[in-house]
Image (tube, rainbow, N blue to C red; front, side, top):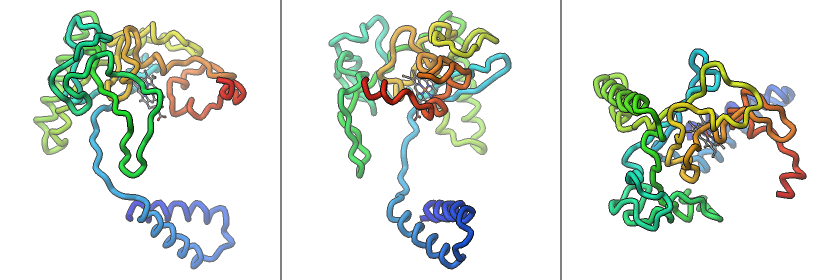
Amino acid sequence: MIAATILGFLTVFHLRANAPGISLGAWLVCIAGLAGCGGLVLTAVTVALIGVHVVGVIKNHPEFIWATFELPSNAPLLPAGMDPHSSDPVSAQSYPLYKGGTPADQSNFLPDKMSIDEKTQVVTPVTNVFQRFVDGGATPQADKDAITSSNANFQAGIRSHKDKIDPIFANYRLTGTTWLLAGTLTPGDGDMVDEAIGSIDLANATMETFEQDVGENCFFCHDTAGIGKNPGKNINTSHIITSQLRRNPKIEEAR
Ligand code: HEC
């Protein structure tokens, strides 16, 4: 209700700026109406944060440093040496995102059709998930060691600052990080995925579930290539920006 009321106020202030002729009383009735309707529609729910991407620019790296964290308890890790398309189960044990005994080749797939129950917000069918690459495929050993020590450091740091941060955040694990050679970001580069350094197979099992393949990493989708008639730009690494660029509707229709 509080959120709906704030939303109602913001909407009305915005509308008022565009339609100053209407009396304050009429606007107050509008606010009450919006808040009432919003209160009926909006419900507070508790959700779990099971995975999170963290990206940021540092000196000489305008491409952003791409890191991802998740709960190691989400899903099993593919056992070393096992074929990711094997008909053997990845694990006998169940995890929140993996039913024990599910074969590897029946996991991590994108269903042909998905539906969502709007009331319960449950998506069907359920996809069983496993994490394919340890440390996002980081090589050499020094990079793997850096991931291990970063995890140990930040988790210990969180646990020892309980007054400042909820120790629950120490349950997350950095899977890995990827970046480009310093100062090499250029507009119109569709090969960034092959130029990645660090965890070159980086994916978050909760988000890139279906895109965990050798040599696939964040730059597989986040690059500076042009889109349709829109030119290649460094800012294109952001999908929030590029999702606003419209492709040729005729091509979209024909696809
Ligand atoms: C298969 C394609 C794909 C891969 C691989 C991918 N992403 Fe994304 N990413 C997307 C899409 C699509 C969105 C936009 C989602 C939306 O608008 O709701 C997005 C959004 C984001 C955003 C929000 C900011 C923005 O403007 O794009 C961040 C941060 C992000 N991804 C980080 C990562 C990281 C880190 C990795 C690698 C571990 C990664 N992504 C791998 C497709 C991908």
